[in-house]
Length: 333
Image (cartoon, rainbow, N blue to C red; front, side, top):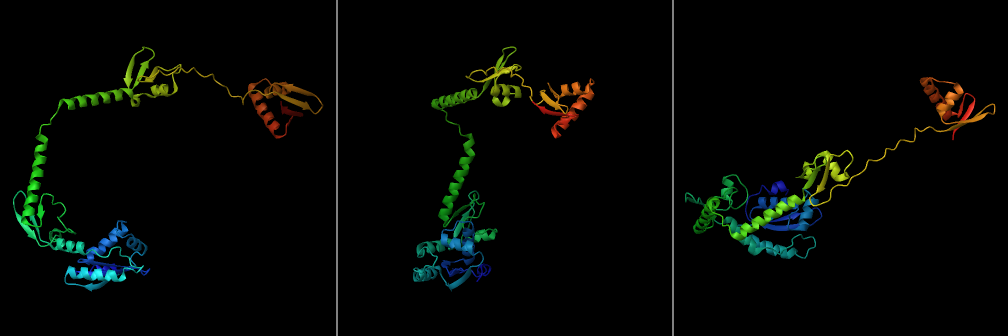
């Protein structure tokens, strides 16, 4: 049988089997095969199954397992005895996935617990009613599983009228305690007052220790502030020191003031400095100049700034390409 077929069988005590493609198999017993089969798969795929080997088989052979009903019974006691003898028969088989030799006591206990009558009671009205099984009331209100229905925290439950009444008294006592708790005066002792005062003072000191002191340089006025409240200029002074243009000085509470950092000397770029140049004419004459501009002014006799700049760019281009311009072989010194 497939999983969809096994969950549609009638609810009765049975001994079932699960066979996997790797020839491993598992034997179990239940009174509700739909609930038990669903629980097997849910626990296996959520990695919460108590039988690790069975869980791995479920995850490896997803939807490939074969379910079967070995035998049906009229009572759970007969199913428990048959399951125990069946497990003993295959216990030494290495392909057998069961990890226990049966749970006779637990099985009978669960059977009696699930089929035992249950009494419900409203603690405030005193009304009591009975249910034949733990699951009957859940099914009536559209819930699954066993036990007290979800959301019925205000309803008392018990397997006998006396248990139900005791649970009702407990619910009433808890509700009464919740009602009067806000109105109960708090007992405050002298030791508690001292401890609260010490705790408050420690919190104040910790707050001050984390604060910073800001000083206005023009007036000398100081005040406490949090680091998060510092302006960008004050934060820059706190991390990098006081610069000549700073308006504030900042320090930690109990720490030293920020040091004065003198202004750095401006460094000019060197790639635009004039470079001396030398050249040899094709007639054999040679000479040196302080810069390429001096060469242009001397050789071409230019005085206009725009013309000098244009001719210098042209000469610089010729110098990069062939080192020759207007009969001169040029090179930077």
